Length: 60
Image (cartoon, rainbow, N blue to C red; front, side, top):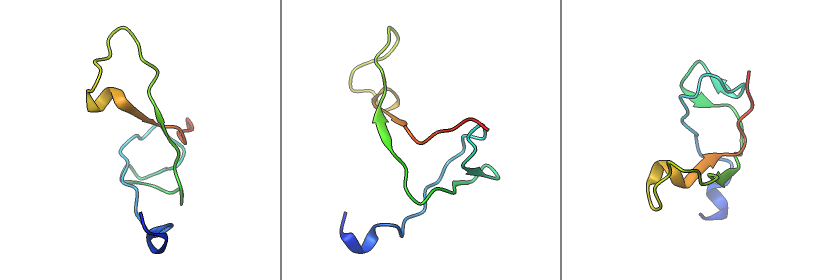
């Protein structure tokens, strides 16, 4: 990502239980931390849904 785009993107989010979610449509944070998911017995290596997790999540 170029430096001119930093801070200019919009983060869509539908996780309504997160305190940073605004009316179920997007994240109000100016920056999020994305972390790899902890592998568990039901995860499948290489599956998109098992690869990452929003590390900035905070429960409402």
